[in-house]
Image: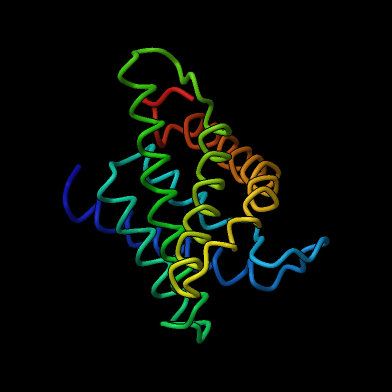
Length: 180
């Protein structure tokens, strides 16, 4: 892929992830559990992992977190550090799961929805690790079961949305070499 075309696509993906990051903050969560979000911007990170590579997806996740926090006025506050730690860990875990499937040369032992759920769980774990470091108290990990339980519906939703997006991209001829 030509460098200019790839750079343009990556820029558009970063912009989309920022919009989803900001849009998500406007959506009221029906069950107000602290730290629980839908994770809509994760759709773009996982899409980048499917279409490109770890480095590209990692850059998109970092840029989305940094620029989204800058635009929402939360850059370098506690929520920024929680968000960036979750983004880093979830991107890494989703990458490992996707590459594990490819190394077996089979069609996704972990479906794209399963990878998304694992990414949501990893994001929550990353947030709790960072929170424990910031407050210097491991008691925060008592909150882990609630956070992991919330990962299932949120990861399922974002994974399902990505699955449908990938179907559309494949049917429209925009991608053709990926199995999902």
